[in-house]
Amino acid sequence: VAFVYPSQLVKGLLGMCFGVLILIDPGVVMISLPIVLGAIVIMDGVNKLQNAFDIRRMGFDKWWVMLIMAVLVIITGFMMIFYPLASLLSIIVFMGIGLIFNGACDLIHVLIITIKYQHFKRKIEEEINE
Image (tube, rainbow, N blue to C red; front, side, top):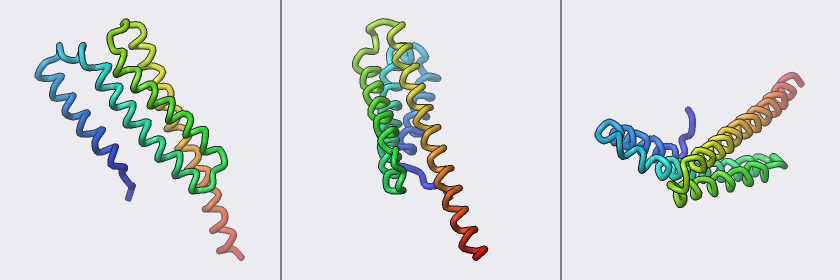
């Protein structure tokens, strides 16, 4: 059974609402897309902050890398919200940066959990074999 962070529930509900809005009034997407994506990126960044502290409690010594990336994701989300119409190019660049950081944080988290799991599994196997 997987543990679901409350922010994932909120993100899912907001995504569904945005999908319905797109179907009702596609023109609104042009105005609201940077703001909605910014909010999603901020929520992901907050979730990544929690992940950073989770892996710190697990004893991973480079947990601060995830922390820095989470802060950068949050900053990128705020930039997307507060500067949505500065220019189309900068919006696309900010979205790209946010998505790159978001994906990188996810990959780092998965790698850390996998490494810790393998280490824990090896220790259990050694205990059983002794």
